[in-house]
Image (tube, rainbow, N blue to C red; front, top):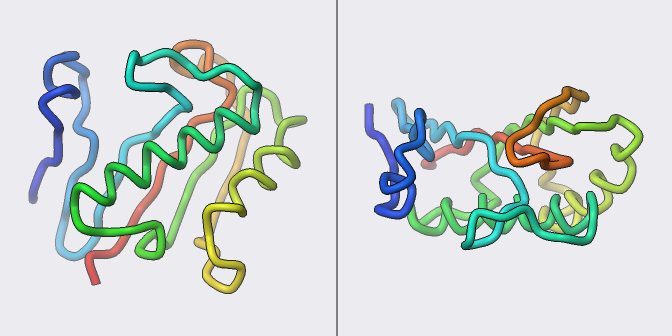
Length: 125
């Protein structure tokens, strides 16, 4: 097993790794739409979804991977009514014929008051 953490993540003393690798699978911890200052971006669900996926993309790129390696995502929403707007922003990051399997559900109390958190699994192959 391998643990993936940037120096910035380690400095925050978070209780989790950014990602772990087991066999050929990368398990990415949930990402919210936060910027480099660890603040949720403004602009609502669309902006937060896009930023969360950019954060995921950046983490994958550090491992020489891309969103094309993602095969499963779990999207947690603070309000299920945001599902259509989140889905539209989400789809813009993936090829139409290579959409990962996905689950989505609503839950209260996302980190930093975020509207969405996205967790992914990717393959090293």
